[in-house]
Amino acid sequence: MNKHMIGPIIFGFLGIAILLWLGVWQVQRLGWKQEVLTEIESRIGADAVAVPALPTVVDHRFLSVLADGRLVGDEIHVLASNKDTGAGYRVIGVLQTDGRRILVDRGFIPIPAKNAVRGAREIAIAGNLHWPDEVDKYTPEPDLDANIWFARDVPAMAVALNTEPVMIVANFDTGDGVSAFPVNTTSIPNNHLNYAITWFLLALAWFGMTVFLLLRIKCQSIQ
Image (cartoon, rainbow, N blue to C red; front, side, top):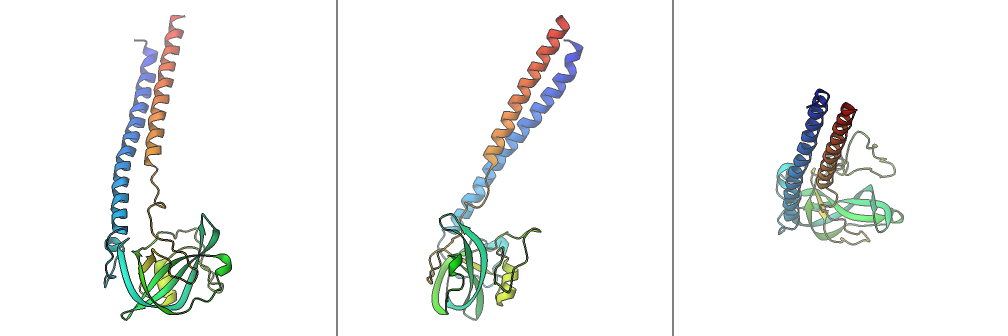
């Protein structure tokens, strides 16, 4: 073997091994993510139960619930977008039930409906408990004067509306022109298959470049 080939061979196959390992790791992550999504979908579609006395993010996220009570009329409007109608707001209301005050994500309204009257009334809310992870360091502070929020920040909304830090996302229309915007798994990214394919293609390209380099070195040694 030409001594000039030793370095490229070691470097080439080390790179191939790393890229293949990354591809295999993404395949494993894909299996894990599919199991997670299946579990979430199962929880979303399960038979509804009463809202637990002390619900927690860890134990009760996506729990299917049913609650009877009274919408008291207080609202927070969270800037959102609907693929069918464009920009608008999520309407976050308050459900008074059994001595408790709970946040309710009633769904979506277009921008012109922001100031429409949605009064207090009795209702049964079916939906899922949810604590969305929408707030980061780039999220603007809410415009309290205009009642425009830029993320569903459950703890902050609970303080603003004097409720428990618990939110039901309604899975059916609750009237007043509000369209349900139910919980689903479509917003949860699952790009692991694409990542795996990318790593495997890079490994193939790396292999091709290594072979090309070795052939070039061999040709140069013959000349």
